[in-house]
Amino acid sequence: MLTPAICLMDVEAPRIAAAAMPGQFLIVRARPEGERIPLTICNYDRSAGTVTIVTQLIGASSRLICALEEGDCFTDVVGPLGRPSDFVELPDEALRGRRYLFVAGGLGTAPVYPQAKYLHERGAKVDVIVGAKTAGLLILRQEMASVCDHLYVCTDDGSEGHHGLVTEKIKLLLEAGETYDQAVAIGPMIMMKFVTLTLRDSGIPLVVSLNTLMVDGTGMCGCCRITVGGKVRFACVEGPEFNAYEVDFDEALRRQTMYRPQEQEADHKCKIGRN
Image 1: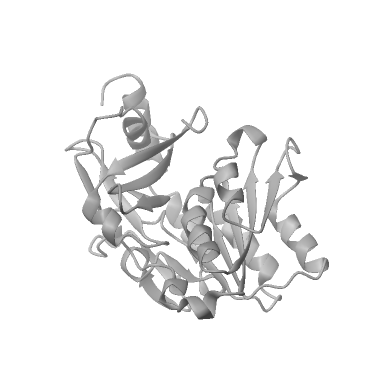
Image 2: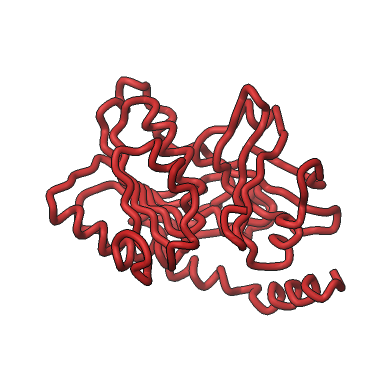
């Protein structure tokens, strides 16, 4: 348990570990009748045959996942799914010396870590801004610090690092003359929207991850439909990463609330043991 409500697991899945790349995700089911939950791959160890996932306890299915103990099994673990981050297609020589800015909100720190690690190992310059409501919700700080050149922490309440939002820290870095070849934002949809608005006029390319808008992970269910550049795209098979400046965030935010009553009912049943 990284915090009382955030759980990290190493999952033994040798074939997935052998194929996983930064930016991809898994779908897990905690029990046969359970729903399919997309979880971005936080790390992978090819020699050990394991992949690492991080889950926040927010509803019925995440409660079932976090209740698993060492030696337990998921009913299903499917992956790696989605397209890897675009930079994995670049040769190491092209990455060496390029400057990347990652902006991670809350649990978004977990999927940012493997990307920062991949780039850092290949000689890229990596700065990371990590934001959380309070210091007690910050995760993977030491791990992240080991794979980036500069780690900037922001907390809403000022309990650690910059007192304020990640967007404020972005503005301070740009005002100080920092320049980047690429930016990546991963976290709550509303955070990614405002990071996009903050960087829109900067001339810095920005990628966001839309891995929360998924169910089956194959594009068949249609739940991951999102408008990007005026066209309907499927986040699970064409993403999860897209050009942030082309994403219709208002549509994505509406879609996230479509099944909230059902989610609340399922969580209530899980809490009282009628699941």
